Image (cartoon, rainbow, N blue to C red):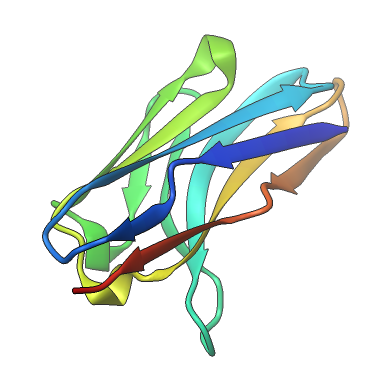
Length: 120
């Protein structure tokens, strides 16, 4: 199995920054992509940003220009630098890892979630 451990959430004021970290460990043969999703109360979980093994990145329109995703492939670690935070960024943020555990089998693995609250 694959385990994800997230850190870095918290309470900040509008305009401030936070950095989320996620480390994947376990039976990982090859990591296809890692990313961050978020879920606000009463809303569906949505993609925030992801990055594939080649370094290609995708961002939600709502975070473009404010958030930056980066990755350490050798350590199966992904970071999300969040700048100019807004109250609407408030949500539980979940780390995702899409990985092969052997030559044939792959899966989507999730962290436990970390709360980000942006409020004055």
